[in-house]
Image (cartoon, rainbow, N blue to C red; front, side, top):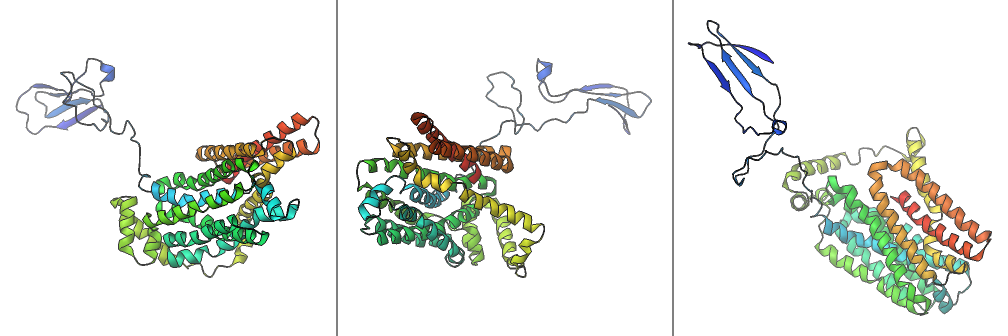
Amino acid sequence: MLEATQLLFTPICHKTISLHPFTILNNPKRNPFTNSISLSLPNKNFKITAVNKQQFPELEPPNDNSDGENKLFTEKGSEEDVDFGWLPTFPHVLTASMSNFLFGYHIGVMNGPIVAIAKELGFEGNSFVEGLVVSIFIGGAFVGSLGCGSLVDKLGCRRTFQLDTIPLILGAIISAQAHSLDELLCGRFLVGLGIGVNTVLVPIYISEVAPTKFRGFLGTFSQIGTCLGIIASLCLGIPSENDPHWWRIMLYIASVPGFILALGMQFAVESPRWLSKAGRIDDAKRVITKLWGPSKVDKAIEEFQSTIRNDGADLDSSWVELLEEPHSRVAFIGGALFILQQFSGINGVLYFSSLTFRDVGITSSALASLYVGLTNFAGAMCASFFMDKQGRQLLLIGSYLGMAVSMFVIASAISFPVDTELSNNLSILGTIMYEPMNMLFAQ
């Protein structure tokens, strides 16, 4: 590139060669700098400058400890630093995820010992009552979820967590001490009330304390907690095959995470969004500074205040609008996905896998059910990994196809047995295949 610049003060003719003030390395290919030559001509008030137009990278200062050798300066940002911005929030998310651990534990706690419970409490062979004992806590969860929103608005997340441990602990103890069917059903229903509140509360709490950048990563801990709870209950269910009273120990153990949750929430932070909504701006700023850093305080408070001001702006909306386009399509697809998940067979696999394995002649049905829990966990981890890479649509399609094939294999092995050993292996294979497919959907 040639540039002509008028010189006002060039009294004599002289030649000037200037080099860029950086060290020139012996290897020209590694040298990111170029030369520039300036020359002033006689009788012409112009200076001709030849420059290789190039933008130089932003440089870091040289290292003085070079041991007498010149070192090439490194570009800023050439090596990405590991971001641990999620670390301050992690203990609080982990404590909240204890609720999901309890959810998973109560999903699988009746899987192994249901036969021993039915024999001791006098409803052996009654499939309807067995199903009621296993699943009544889901009915309690439905009732509990309805009241979660009002509790959080009045008490905040921390106090709601602690209050919610009361039915969780009492329900587990009443179930463990039950000597009649009514006592067992009452205890299981109380547990369901607590589970229902937590299934709504945990995602709210995690999303409001987690930094935006790590919200997806930290949000997966709720699902991972559920998977770990299922694995724990299935592991503890193995001794129930030899000890008919072991189920009481399992239900007593279910009260322990409730105590841990109540104590842990005493040291956890409150949701900064709720603090801002309650008018406790200074407390909200302290929490944001602790979790997200001081640079995020003003922006976060402004966002919270804007949300509060706009809250209730759509009170004139009605449920009928969900039947109009484009809302109707979204509502139908979203609702159908959740309904179809419940009818896809996941509950039957998680609640009655031990009975299924026992019916097809598996010697250690509880141990086989443990493999189901482990594949369940593996599916959750795979879903978390592939979600951002492949997208939700592909995961949904693939998971539904996988679940359909798995259930077909199970039903065929039980209904049309060709060979006993082959049928047993196909039943185990279909059940184990089903769990990771379902976790891909659930994420």
